[in-house]
Length: 58
Image (cartoon, rainbow, N blue to C red):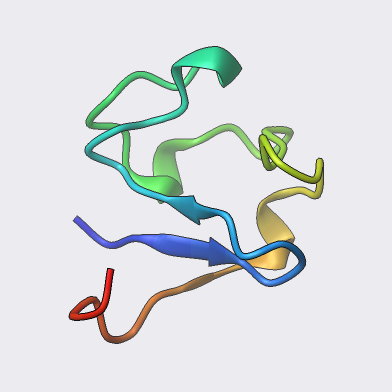
């Protein structure tokens, strides 16, 4: 599954892990996260995330 990175604080959303503290179950794709979800580290919304193109160094 595609990972996404916060352009503000570099938090990486990994769909395999989800965000249990934020109510997002493991296995939830980024597209299926509610629009009002916020970055667990800095609080910005999904608009401030972008897809990670190359996942080799993660």
